[in-house]
Amino acid sequence: MNITVIGAGYVGLVTGACFAELGNHVTCIDVNQQKIENLKQGILPIYEPGLDLMVQTNMQQGRLHFATSLRDVIVEPHVIFIAVGTPSDKDGSADIKYVLEAAKEIGARINQYCVIVDKSTVPVGMGDQVLTTIQQELNRRQSDAKFDVVSNPEFLREGAAIEDFMRPDRVIIGLSSNNAKGIMLDLYMPILRSPERIYFMNIKDAEMTKYAANAMLATRISFMNEMSVLCERMGVDIENVRIGIGSDSRIGSAFLNSGCGYGGSCFPKDVRALIKMAEKHHVDSMILHAVEERNHQQKHVLPSKIISKFGEDLSGITLGVWGLAFKPGTDDMREASSLVLIENILARGGRVQAYDPAAMPVAREVMPKEWFQSDKLRLAEHQYEALEDVDALVLVTEWKPFCYPDIAAMKTLMRGRAIFDGRNQYDPTHIRDAGFEYYGIGR
Ligand SMILES: NC(=O)c1ccc[n+]([C@@H]2O[C@H](COP(=O)([O-])OP(=O)(O)OC[C@H]3O[C@@H](n4cnc5c(N)ncnc54)[C@H](O)[C@@H]3O)[C@@H](O)[C@H]2O)c1
Image 1 (cartoon, rainbow, N blue to C red):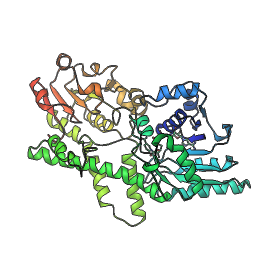
Image 2: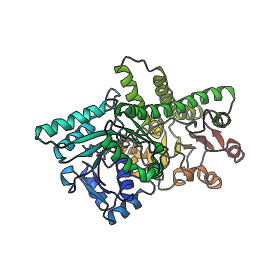
Image 3: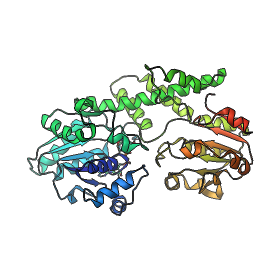
Image 4: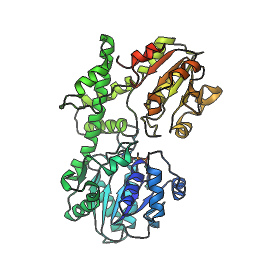
């Protein structure tokens, strides 16, 4: 099949590369010219394990191409995916302008029947808006090209995106046309092998499924974070409670880790967007407000523990921070807990030496320039360089190399003996036996 993907970010690039890997002819389009120039030379805009090799191989095989506009796509696509960003607008609702721009361009370009698949996470009802926008453009240029709109929300996790895309738990497809249904089945059958795990529903149901899924996962995390605050007050170890409840098949063990708050490009913005959707329909989303508020507070738990130990004035104190990305396996720092932590430390006169295995280039771009002035924040070349002469280590992102640290090296390098474990990765007894003070979350 000939496929065009609009938006070559975390979702679009993975979608394009994976469909090319399955033998389709794919063109990924992005308005960011630099991104496209780099991709044409095999330089990826993001860190995602395995993606660089997949992109390079499929480019070499002539199945994967890049362009800055639909105008430059030579073969008429059978399917066009919209995978542009839907960030939070000023009031918290999803900003749909990139989706509408993509729809407008589609309407201005298509000449034959085509399935338009919305992969971006969009507010319920967006399918109708995409349809209207495309039709208006077709009418304007008096084209009778036919098309169908489909919702196919994406559930991949950054850091495991290829695995998730190629072996999904399920594929959700919202549509109202049999023609489009056949094409979507053809597209996904090589991945799923059997149709049982493709769930067809109407477009609005599919759009809502994505928000409900993210809101549920965010709720589990905030629930566990709330439990961790209570556990800490009562002398209970949240880690034992997590294992205890996670082994209950009615609950399951995923997304039960308490920590220093969730970030990323999805949970925070999607919870906010769902609250806004509820407001529009006069529903008071009591649970989602609480999920958001708990997460906001949770991002301040590490700063609070650090202040409890060192005092409000942190001048003269240097902290080594391990992990800047919002989670391991990605360089994405959107709404990362590390940003809240570092801002708090620097505001109190402290210094930070930070290291992340993948997010250092992104960190240099997204962190305010003043943070780097007078060496208040220094980005280290190596995880142990970040520990030179520090008063404490703060683990923010549980990358694997941080989970099994070289205790002897830490003792030599660090001047202090405190470890703040923002992801409950370490065994408190081992850490204490090694001569360190241990501060976890809810333990
Ligand atoms: N990142 C994730 O893990 C993830 C997972 C599931 C769903 N989603 C959803 O998928 C969507 C995309 O997310 P992302 O993280 O890939 O975003 P991203 O910001 O990484 O990428 C979006 C890309 O779209 C490009 N773009 C914007 N307008 C364009 C246009 N008119 N034409 C061509 N390109 C355009 C941007 O330049 C950017 O490169 C969002 O709605 C998001 O909520 C993301």
